[in-house]
Image 1 (spheres, rainbow, N blue to C red):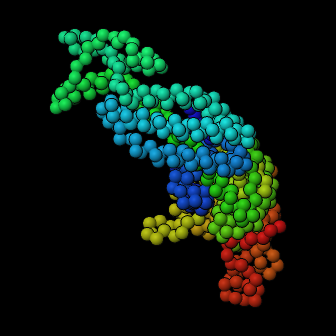
Image 2 (image 1 turned 90 degrees about the horizontal axis):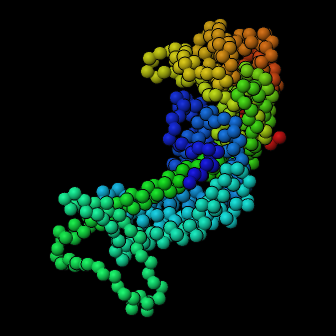
Length: 515
């Protein structure tokens, strides 16, 4: 049995190796906030969310759309989804009391533990089958339809009743019926466990029926050696049955374990959806396209981690960057550029792992990998300068770059002067574009930004954080030519309380506004 709720034809592997830059992605995009919101204090949910989101760039279009359909069903039927997760979770917790027998070297102990575990599993499978029969009509996705059809088809009541009968027989309350042969040296060989003969239903006939001729012997109560020998004899006969039942238990256990992991992803999505709904923050299912295309269009895109942190709806951004490989964003300091860049990265990862995205509408091409190059604080140990550290990280990223990846730069290479920083950035971006890497670059390096603007490139777009008269930041992003100033004087005036600065908000937080 397979759940197949994350992929159409394979299991979800939550132990898979994460990308080498997962630490940088988590730090730069503040992914811990997202994972914590999905987990709601549950470490298992946190681990599954982390694995699924960071592995998103490995998914193809078919897997993403398959998962989107399943998630839509989950949003329509949250109670059923949470019940499925709870059943799997409680089952795995209950199995612990049956483990001791399975790990024993004695066939009788293995059999005893496996029978107990299978009795529990039969009850669980029956409960899952009942859910499938009752709620299958409310689900439309291919994943859930196949899952419920499997439960209803393979676990009908007649089959479960037969399993219960076999489990009762394997308790050997009337003793075990074995057959054996004499081998070399008259040593017992070819021990086989036999099915007990059917008993006559009429007890009167059983009472007066002719008994077959048999030979019996009785052990003395104190004959411990004889009891040990008989126990070993019985163990030889039931060994194959014990191993077969243990394997069956492992198979069902593996199914429950995979079901728990796959349902954990969707429960995490439900947790996130409910929190955003309480904030009045919009979400939508994105329209992904192949990585070879160049599409990036969205309405109302916002930083989901910022919304979760300040517990408010935040301003959304609209942009149209289809057929573009390069997006350069400039503008006023503290105008929301860093927040915009985070929202791009978060939406890309959420889309590629099959989730909804924090936007009113969103469409983008897949990326083969996602990389971030953000400015870092000064090295406290002074082992290297900031520029050396930035170039070292860039070298590591370049080694792992591949076509159709995406790179997000946030004020990179600004640790040196304007001329050198612009030249470094220009050469790196030019090399990335030549390798078909999509680049988003937030910068205050005017020479770098305007140098690309002057080329009048068809595959580049230039955005700017808007600034109102008087210095106020509306946290809007517009398509515009890069300016030579980032209005740092606004921050100075705001910090030192000049009349003009009284209206300036110095926080890099996008305040809540409903359009």
